[in-house]
Length: 194
Image (cartoon, rainbow, N blue to C red; front, side, top):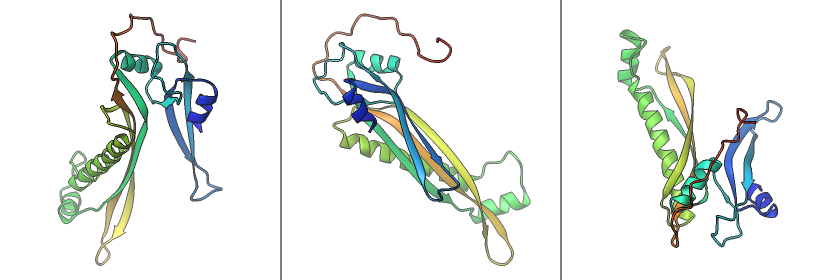
């Protein structure tokens, strides 16, 4: 819907796209997603495609990307949920020789696996959008939740659920890229400059 609104406005791209999600207590099991960005039009962008692209890059970074001979082809995202169980070694070290600064290796592996799986999904989506030159502007959101689990007898251990959201912009290299445009002044459009 965001891309369609940008097309109706005659935009070349939507920059600064961010995706917000929320849930409501009165609507259990439902998640709301809101996509927000700034539609831009510029005569410097002569790609020949009337379909606006979505990018989570700022307007300044978008212009730098174009000046360097690359063009965004869309937003790519991946979400992964990993359940990291507490293994025997971690149970023993946490139970008997607990130190507040020690690493919990089972949880570390869970976070690394979740991040790698989310990135794998991001790269798979980028490959579907065209021959990718890469993914830029990556943003990660990490959430962990402790889960109490009962083992044999009355023993309780704490496992961890790891949720990783990854969002970026897939890019391709422009074939007919000319010399970089002249240096121009770009000001960030945030609350501090308004």
